[in-house]
Every structure is written in structure tokens, then in C-alpha cells.
Image 1 (cartoon, helix red, strand yellow):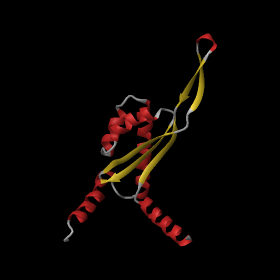
Image 2 (cartoon, helix red, strand yellow):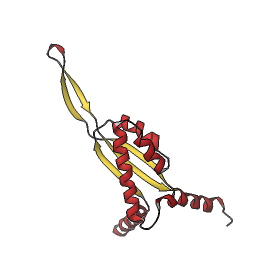
Image 3 (cartoon, rainbow, N blue to C red):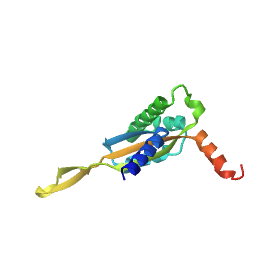
Image 4 (cartoon, rainbow, N blue to C red):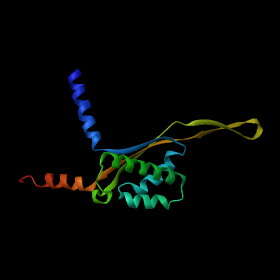
Length: 145
């Protein structure tokens, strides 16, 4: 069993070498608001996504723009000497998950109190390259070659 775990761990490490991502944990905005902004850039070219986020007035857009720049920096570290324009980078996936909720109390009339949940979220941005994607499509579409 030890060898099987070792082999799967090695395969996971090799897969992560071609994966370019960045994570943001406990961002202080609700997941619903972050998903609205994340859907704007999901599947878009990286340059277009940065332009969209720059001109979106939401608080979540600022956080997502910074996260996308971090994912780009991670891509540049793994691909030294390769130009970003030549690689056709795009936002492959944006995952927004709920984080922890801070429970607060708001005073209400007649001595009552209302519970308030201050929500947070976890965001993961994954980048992909269209050039690699097209090469794999050519191989799978031509079974005779």
C-alpha cells in the first residue's frame, strides 16, 4: 500500500507542475457577491479578464484582480523565458467556496437582538493555455494518425 500511495503522490506532483493557480482564503465578502464577479471572467483571456476586473466597481473585483495577478506571477515562475502573449493564457476555472461566518448580534426593538452572519469565502483561480488544449484536441480527433 505504501508504494501505491507513493506513485499516486508522484503523479499528483507531476500534474501540479503544469497547473497554474492561486488561492485566496477568508476573503471578507459573501460567496454570492464573489460568484457574480467570478462569472464575468470565467473562460476569458487573461488580458481581457484583467481589463474587465479593472473596470468593475465591486469590492470583490479588486480582490479577484489581485488574485489573478498572483496566478500570472505563479505562471511566470514556472515558465521562465516564455512570453505571456505567445502562450494564449486564459482563466480556466474560478472556484468560490464559502468560508467561515462570523456571528454578530444587532440590537433590535424592545430588548431583542437579531443574529447577523458576516460571511467570507475561499477563491481559487486556475489558469490554462489554449495552445496545449488545441494540441490535445488534434491528437484525440485523429485516431488514424
